[in-house]
Length: 235
Image 1 (spheres, rainbow, N blue to C red):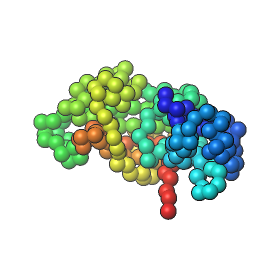
Image 2: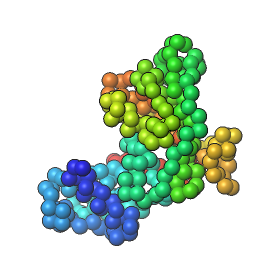
Image 3: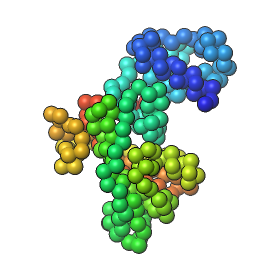
Image 4: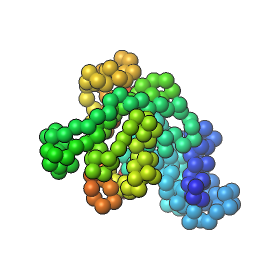
C-alpha cells in the first residue's frame, strides 16, 4: 500500500467512526506531516483523494473541513470502484450472488453499443448484491468475449474486475455513467429487498480499456434509501 493511501485510509476511518465529525477542521498539513511522519506531498495526495471521495473540503489558506458523509454505501461517480474496494475496512458484510450467466449474440442494442457484428458474442452476467443481509443491488453486465473469453460462477461472485486486471492483464481506465430514477421492473422486485419502495436508482455505464476498446456495458439498480451518489464539483 502506498504512503498516501495509508494516510487516506486512516483519516477516512476516523471520519467514518466520528472521531472527526461533520464541520470539524482536520489538523493542518504540517500537523499531519508530524503525525504520520510523511512528506507534505504525501499528505496533500491523501487529502486530495479524500476530497475527491467527498469526505472533506479543502479550503485555500485554511484547514480542510469534514463533510457530512454517506448512508450505507457511497458510490463515487468520478472513480471506478468495486464493492470490495469500497469496503476496504470491512465495515459491511457484502455478498454477491450470481443469478444468471450465459452467452448472447445478435442482440441489436448490444451490437450498437459495442459496434459489433452479429457474429460477435458477449457474456451476460446477472447478479444481486446483499449488504448486511439485505439485497440492495441488482446488476446486469455485458462483457465482450474477444476481451474476456471466460467467466464462471466463482469469478462472478468474487470480483470480475480483479480477474480482468490481475489474471487477464487488461487495464481499465474510465467509464461513462448516467444516473436515472425510475419505477422498479419485475426482476428488480424479484431479486431486491425493496420493502415499500417501488422505485430504484439506476447507474448505467460503459467501461473502457486503456486502448479505447469497450470492455463492459451494464447497469446497477439500487434501493434509493440506502445509497448516495457522490461527485465533487469545483468552481
